[in-house]
Length: 104
Image 1 (tube, rainbow, N blue to C red):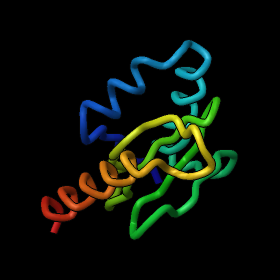
Image 2 (image 1 turned 60 degrees about the vertical axis):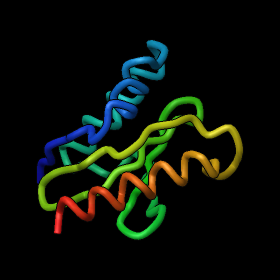
Image 3 (image 1 turned 90 degrees about the vertical axis):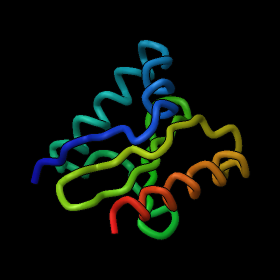
């Protein structure tokens, strides 16, 4: 199954656009695999509720939701510790709350 990729917020797109060349290539590969529905070969884990997290070069993360045939990228960040920062967690959960209200 193929998926359409939608960045829900400028933050995620701007983060993606600001990556180094090596990080950008890695992120592009992950996004391409997601869009092709080819989830093998990339690390994806369920984060909270229906939010998934995937990793790419140098501790970068994408947080996303899958709804029908669309992958909505909620947020992107670089983890500096072993867990998501409180600020990032709050942002992701707020975005997910807005997403749920729009997709009832």
